[in-house]
View 1: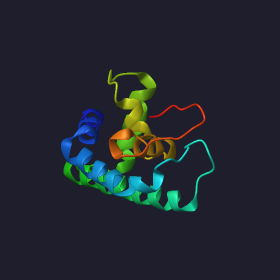
View 2: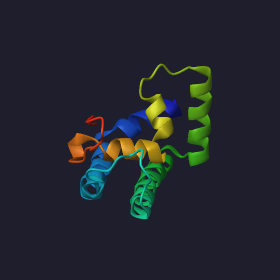
View 3: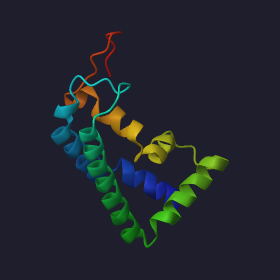
Length: 123
């Protein structure tokens, strides 16, 4: 039950609005960045702000459900390992605080950023 509640929390309007506002405010510096190229120190600073935001959201979830963040992640990992939850969002939930996930999200055209790469592909 806690894993399903956590999945719903991460997909909730409140969570998405908070994260999307962060991306909209910070995406300008990522315009034209190739995520496969060497990353600037400034990107790490923005990423750390994003991780802080994700941690705040997790803390809110934990307080409301009277669990620890360790409990949540252990249960999510257990469910992912045994495949008890048939949820297409589970892989994204497990990656939500990873730098690669952060870059995938901030580079989405919806936030005004796109990759200028030699292959002319865009996200």
